[in-house]
Image (cartoon, rainbow, N blue to C red; front, side):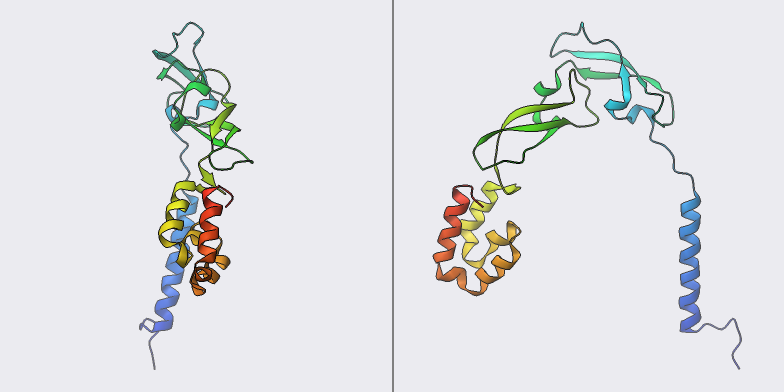
Length: 191
């Protein structure tokens, strides 16, 4: 007969499965270390008085982590930031979203500051922005794809219209008619 310790494919698989379960369990039992306090989001900090700072200048200020935020390390530290109102900072410091957006139009969007950025005023604000999107995708990319590869449905694939893209691909862009229609629809920002 076979000895219990002889290796068979079934026992090898079972041993690997038990090892994986033990490894996952032990990994889950390890304590999760909190974020270092100096990396706390700006919304969880109380920083020094900025009322007397000169707009545009660099300011060194003392920040303290709010009591309810769990973090490791010193809860009071210094931070340097540019004294500027949130809505005046560089666009890379915030993200904006709008429900109504047609390419090339100006809309009011709700903008939110990135967590790491310190600034004056409200961290969420309305801002007038120019839309450069076609249903959430970059308009210029969709336009170029429509010109170069529209006959193969690549523009529709890019815009997430997979069913229409496949149909456009097998019909050779509707023998060019559908390609032209999509080109116009993307050009005017409808798609």
